[in-house]
Image 1 (cartoon, rainbow, N blue to C red):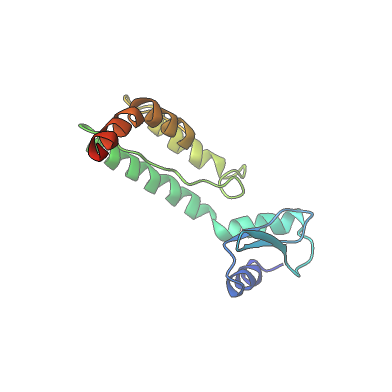
Image 2: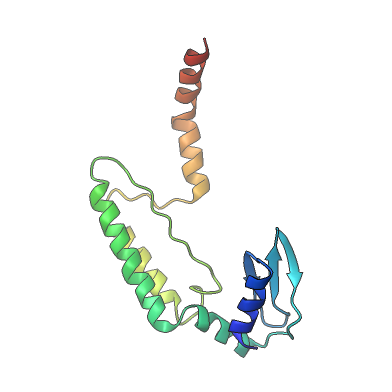
Length: 145
């Protein structure tokens, strides 16, 4: 299976996602619906080749370098007021055994700094609701009174 063929197929159908898993045919997501492609079942070797095509080894290193640079900049800018930094990761790409060390490196760099809250999106939303939502509700009530 050629990853470029699968991606071309997905683009031609305006797919938002491509799902590749060994032992299954590739799937694409179109308008929220997961659809099988006409390609054959993917072998473990093909799945690995697909992941490598999306992020070759030098790109995993680049991911680590740029993510650390982004953090360092936001950390410096956040001296007076906090900043939020999202790290987009996908286990199919960065979760591979030969790439996970790059994500580990990034997370260790971030965790080594004081005043860093490593949180999920849900934890951030919970904090906002607990700390600011009542104040927003009062403010909106004053505006409509």
